[in-house]
Length: 110
Length: 113
Image 1 (cartoon, rainbow over the protein chains, first blue to last red):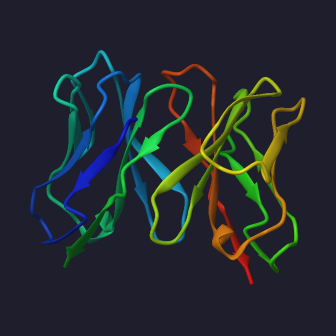
Image 2: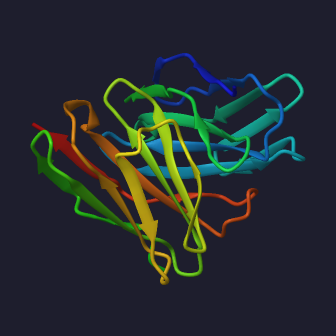
């Protein structure tokens, strides 16, 4: 059974810092891995999608990597801003559904 | 291009009642997914519809059901509501292929009293 774990559960950093969020999954048989952002009480915003054949994806200040063989992904956020404060979720697609981690709650202090 | 829309935004029901939640996918998307996000729990996969058929369901009892219409919009029905059904219900859509990104709606917050 595919399980997704995110570490840390919560993170608080001062504005301007670079940071890394971690995601691990137990079964490497996945179609893709996706990072989402969720603001309190709201839906999910897709940040980056990495196909199983890819190693990384970049969008602006965000960079996500995927090491399928070790079951790990990282989301790197450069020069963090208060507007980055949200919960970040990673999800893997093993088949016809998606399995989500519990998320990392990020707070960026001005 | 309009995103995924869900209605209603909020829904209050009492135990034992039925709830109906609606989702309209992005134009051109044939797949609709439903997820439950209960307080203190992660996002849990509920149902997947594609081309009008239920393709997969998560580990939820049969009182959670739904359907997809010819225009690819979808309904999620929850019968015999229980207090623990209180959650944010998220709908997502995609082109249906397993490699495709899922795009999420804003959710319907269901409160069961």
